[in-house]
Amino acid sequence: MFDLLLRQCRLLQTDRTITETDIAIKGGVIVEIAPAIVGHAKVELAIQGQLVSPPFVESHIHLDSALTAGEPRWNQSGTLFEGIEIWRERKQNLTLEDVKTRAIATLKHQASQGVLFVRSHADVSESSLTALQALLEVREAVKDWITLQVVAFPQDGIYGAPQNNALMEKALEMGADVVGGIPHYELTREDGVNSVHRIFELAQKYDRLIDIHCDEIDDDQSRFLEVVTACAIRTGMGSRVTASHTTAFGSYNNAYAIKLLGFLRRTQINFIANPLINITLQGRADTYPKRRGVTRVKELWQQGMNVSFGHDCVQDPWYSLGTGNMLDVAFMGLHICQMTGTAEIDACYDMITWNGAKTLNIEDRYGIEVGKPANLIVLNAKDRYDAIRCRAIVEYVISQGKLLVKTEIPRTIWHGY
Ligand code: FE2
Picture 1 (cartoon, protein in one colour):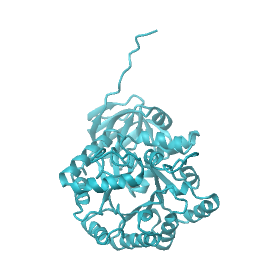
Picture 2 (cartoon, helix red, strand yellow):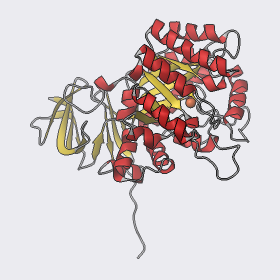
Picture 3 (cartoon, rainbow, N blue to C red):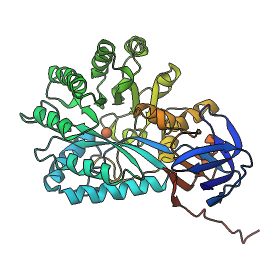
Picture 4 (spheres, rainbow, N blue to C red):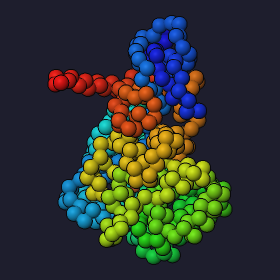
């Protein structure tokens, strides 16, 4: 007797082929994948040829600021820097309950749309470390249905205020999973370089991953990615390192960018682009032509680098929109990055699934295979292209072997000619 049996799935396998099969789950684990499995289950779902995929991975979000748009005021300029100013005011009023309530509400929005793995940044530039403490408590509270990684993120810079460096270290002692940074927002270029060295030092001391907000600016002279690359090469930390945003990479001249790509190939660092947010934040000082404000996603992908897409913000001072739907993110990403070839569209789907799992260093427990934890989603779609094109509804979300969410598919009734 199985716990859960899914009949007639179109299973998107780890090698990206699709096979028609049943899937049996017991004790939170996938125990059999085969056509017409013999046996019964406590719950049996008729999937009827819909796409069964590993869950979506949200590799970059700020849960501490989610659902605060308009508090205390709206971002009228639409810039990153007005967003940071507004957040500086809003975070004076943070309480544990405030952050936890908004974070869990956002995670529920995400999970109901198929996201079961999340990496969230927590601002640690504020002396009480309320945002971090709250997200660490949320990580524990939700662990039975969603996996949350927390990044110690120095929003105002590691050297932007006297206490920030010590706060970073305290955040890691408290249990943050990942060391963050923001070198382009440090007071000087030298501070930015030093901050990257400090991040690697802390990550090695505490055995943590790294995820740096890197060069999230239109300035073509913002070149901290090369510092991250050098540190990754020298430390050998490669796949444990992520460069988020890197929007300036889109503004570098080709001579420099091509040289940098060569260095990047010597690392295995991960990239995260956040197309919903950066298409609106960046290029604000441009007249025309306006830049797109995303990193070189297509070129990095073509070079075999691991690139994932993140949502970044949901209704906060930087982006007042957003629902937590990762298919919206992939849809926007493929447009901005001009990835409309069939292989490119499929790659954009991978950027919200497998590539995100690689960034989070959770590949060993990700994917629909016998013996792996039973985390999967059922989409009202036939394949990856169809899922992105239609922003397909996730009908079932199965987390750790249990049915977590069912969403009814809307039905259109045509009464005309
Ligand atoms: Fe971010």
